[in-house]
Image (cartoon, rainbow, N blue to C red; front, side):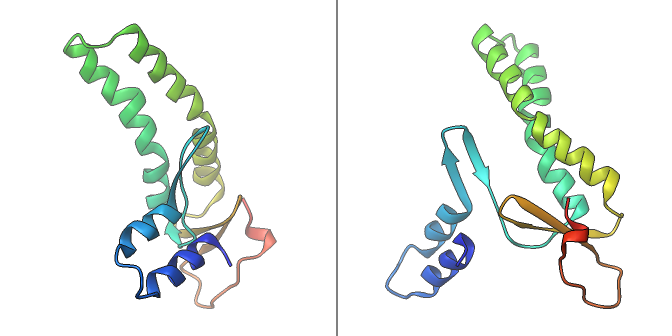
Length: 134
C-alpha cells in the first residue's frame, strides 16, 4: 500500500477528527535535504511545468528583485537564494526533459521515483508502461 492509499484509508476511518491534516502529512513532508511534495494523481503537462518552475521563479528571481528594491538583500539572504538556485538545478533538468520529450497534450503520473506519461488525445485507454518512462 502506498503512502497516498494509506492516507485515504486513514481519512475514511471515522475515529480521526482532524482528517485533512492527516492527508496533508502524507503528501507534504520535510526531509533533511528540504521539503518534498508528492502525488500519485495524473497531472497535465502544463500544470507540471508550472508546479516545477514556480518555486525557482519566486524564490530565486522575484524575491531577490523585491528585496533588492527595498534594500533588504543581506549577504545571508543572497547565500540562501544562490543555494536555492543550485538546488533547483535538478528541477530545471526535469523541466527540460518534460518540455522536450512529452507531447503537448500529455498527462504525467509518478510512482515513487519513476514518472510515466500518456497522451490524453488517444481514444483508447492505455496502461502506463516502460516505453513511456521519463
